Image (tube, rainbow, N blue to C red):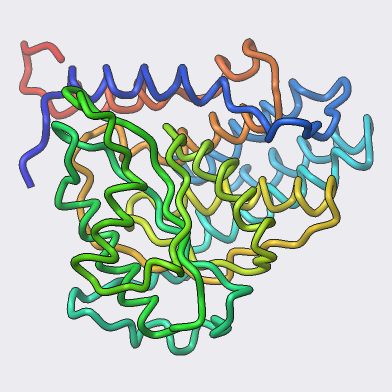
Length: 317
């Protein structure tokens, strides 16, 4: 797939980073209080990113030291931090973490052994992708095709589509979620009554915050996330943090038990830094101070370093 110029990727990244730092919990919701250990949370997220990008024998030592420092301040914060670290180890660091790949034939036999209940208590959560000229791009259509295949395999489940009015030159204010619903019903033949939409989310973190409200309202307790393969670990990490907060704050259990991926390369280079975006957005959801968020490994810097490394001698990024 032809990639956009790096300067476009960096512009997109800057916008997404600005938005990710503004993520809030739902109205009326209070985030878990992180007391004097916000810096330690920042160190933990930094070391988790480093363990994924540059594995070393010291990774476990550094992460465990961060957890010990958090525990010394507050046991509740430690429980949350340990859950984040354990999940990160599973999703990002385990080479055997399974990604279920959609084969493009309208069916989903790959999910037969995933333990998905055929019930309205399970949701297929479809994450949006930026619109172009107010219309869906092929990647978003592909995600919807995968979601439709999963919906046919489990006909009693519901679908939740998330994504706002994104992209330039969108005078009608079309939303990703609204167009996804139209595509799922008109092109894929999915019953409209099964589909719920969030038309406000502009980032993966906002996808999670907004869809969790829909999930709780519909008494959903398990979900399958549908997105592109390069985006899945990022999405899983962010959704896990929200699940932990809902369990702690509301006593409501929502768990991601499966994934279904569109196998496609990212068209914008910065999306290859999904681990760094996940760390930024987790920090935003937790309400870490801006100076802590700014101290995290930058997605834009990663793209810049990799791009410069690929340039012939004597050229500039």
